Length: 347
Image (cartoon, helix red, strand yellow):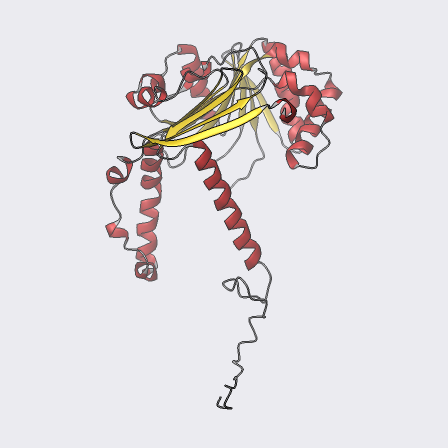
């Protein structure tokens, strides 16, 4: 793909109180399929994250088979492709079973403590889709135990031996028209019911419609992140924890006055959604993003925070070293000060 790129340019500007990023990559068109955003029908009024992208994995089988890198994702895909080869699953099977579009949605209802996440794809051939899904779950994790059930014309795979300390039991469901994978059975079943009704609360919301109008119609990728809704849910979950911690550990009050934290309404009025789209026009791909921060900036921010956290963890790992002394390699047990002499001999 890099060899096909002829030119790259970009710009960033402030536009009515928002940041507007625009990037252009001159290269041949990679796919004739246009993004339909069919997964938008699964969105609800509590959806804070929605992604839709063209990802026809069937067209990438050869490239994945030829990959020889040492990155973890390469090894994971190689293991999965080996499972496909053993069971006779081919690229043509994948293209015949699934659509070329992948959707991802995250919901956070107000009564729930944590959000739910689903990944979905259209199903063109249910028989082949069930075969591929069965091979996929066992190819990724051979030690996992999955329970298979059929309900209402939908085939379910539910993980049985996941971690017991968190309420996460991955589920994959395949119907005649839709494949949905999620972190729990309830969110997957709810998404399948919304898919049958074809009524999207998300697309009808004023917040979503205003944000989507800020970018051009996508042909390859679309992303939406409602920062205001996400902050409201985080505040409702974390604020009680902070107040309780301050009550049981008074020392926290020396650094944070939890009673003076601003209300969510004060913060969220400044948090408009982030929206991003990608389209092919003028001999290249145009990636556009608008928001209080853009999709590119948020990605860079997450990467920097992860790097700083990893660096701090590594510096604090060695035993006998002071984790707060970033440049020191003197063992912490050597704490006796050594007197020094000034030029005139006075200690």
